[in-house]
Image (cartoon, rainbow, N blue to C red; front, side, top):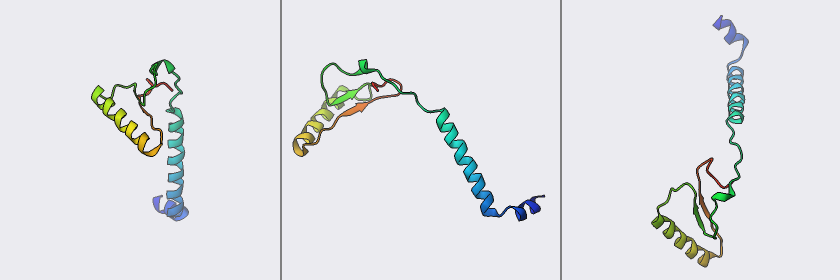
Length: 93
């Protein structure tokens, strides 16, 4: 029966159909596993800072060094830069 199937369905069409099926299934799985929106502004610091480490990824020394580098970059370029280290779902949103 495999020989008859190979003759009835061209190879490229079979591969194309399998690929389409795989992609449609992966899109469906992506929709099912979609992350829900989060809004937790209480996680933001009360005072302004260029570095917000909600997740606790950075040591205090790393945060201070990063703040200084951002301050120097802003002085040199005029661009504003903010860093938010977060870990879903513990995020300000």
